[in-house]
Length: 327
Image (cartoon, rainbow, N blue to C red):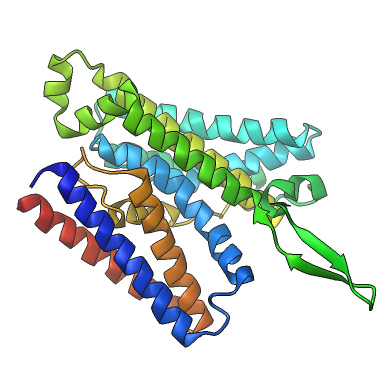
């Protein structure tokens, strides 16, 4: 069975799982299919999707990035500290994304130049980035950032609000949250890059067989470096969006987010051995995780039980991936 056929089968299975979850939770909760809850799910999925897109590119090359949860925290607090120091909000958030890209660059250099295993290189960055975030904030939240800082995370396009007879605003349509729009744009851009550009073909080639790619003229180190920079940049974007939603920068934000990112990619058909994966599959995987969490919350399932269920889903998915690769 070739890689394309395996990827399609995995993607179909993930989509079927997604539809099954929607059907089950729609029957168990009347509010699950409401417009407001749909927007809530989409907003909650954005963080998983941003990180998952970056993780997909890294995993396709045969690597792994465990640092994104810590990098997003560092990027978010840097953006917040810059804004609090008087830097305009767009520039502050741009600085946060650059910090994420720089962390990705360091990860890539450790892997390509120092020849460290990706697991070890990004594990080290996970500890360093979290430590720096805690150090520069004194392990305290950064608050007092102003309403403009929260616009990116809490604003929405096409939001419709009317004033009722009682003088209070009524939300007719909650609008499309800005983070959701960013998610769609990022997903389309990276999907096009992977499927329609030379860089995308080289990313798949490196993951399929790095030595054969090198002999074919592919700069393996450069391609690998680009994927880690992309992953770091998206982690930086995630940090800025999350801190904007809270209108407060938390240095402890993003703990264990790297596992959601990897899980969304694997659920969507990205192979942990490299060479196989798509952004559309990762998007499906992100929604599987998001809908699972949302539905369990609406049915009163405890957070501890949710961790158990999602952990079992990840184990099952990786097991299926291993069986598929052996075949």
